[in-house]
Length: 70
Image (spheres, rainbow, N blue to C red):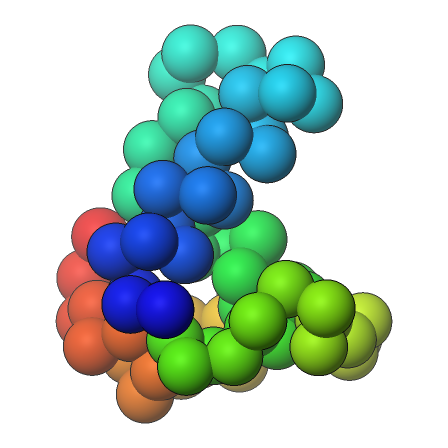
């Protein structure tokens, strides 16, 4: 599984949940991945539910998906 695959799958999940078009973007997808703590090489069945604030979410995006600013 690649990070791009995870991002695209996260976007599909957000769309299925009824998120508005304005929120169907890479930032929202990466936020979902961070909130579930899904790393690029991990499968969705390893999802967790850690309590994360904004800074840890941004750190996760940077460390796991190489996204500095979105």
